[in-house]
Length: 238
Image (cartoon, rainbow, N blue to C red; front, side, top):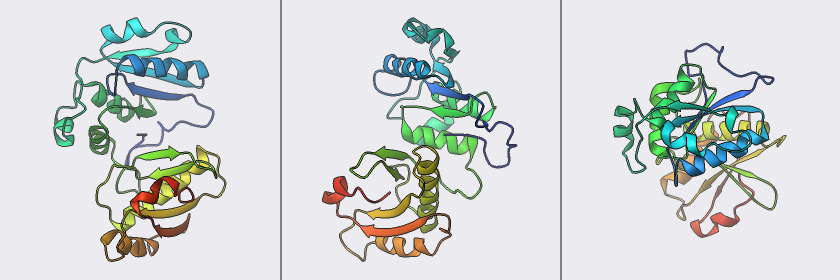
């Protein structure tokens, strides 16, 4: 998740020449904080970013050893959000947790982006409440970059939303298009809609047709209905 949110000033948006400040939920995910700290150390060695690990300092500090460790900041917070915690409960209990504080650092301008490998539903819910969405985007989405013979594919949304309105699909396409251009260097991404439905009368297919009438002037949109068994080879749709 990144800031700033709707209605806030753009002073906190990093410029191209500014080092990005990333807040990391050190207590979220499998084998945390060990694996999260190990990943942060690798990222720090690559350079170009300022990292802050958020979580139980007593557990994080002993893991910060080796090259780059001294450059990683730690923000202590004792609480954690369980991987199986319902999203609504996580929002209510976010204060004083590593995930809640990670998002809050983006809100208050001390970080440019928040990263968590923990409870994705809780992460999205907390970020939506605390950061809101940018203008023109109704719902957040999870983007997954998948390999294919023809190059990387951005799958967006990859699980944040169960039932989508047509305009949301169009917005996901625009976000995926922007990410593919900026992060992956694809000059002209091709945007498509993948449905797992085998029956044309199911709602996803009608949603496809209605989606095309939305404002998609900034991206080329194509549609296809892909059976579930074919998803691993559907490498041409982004």
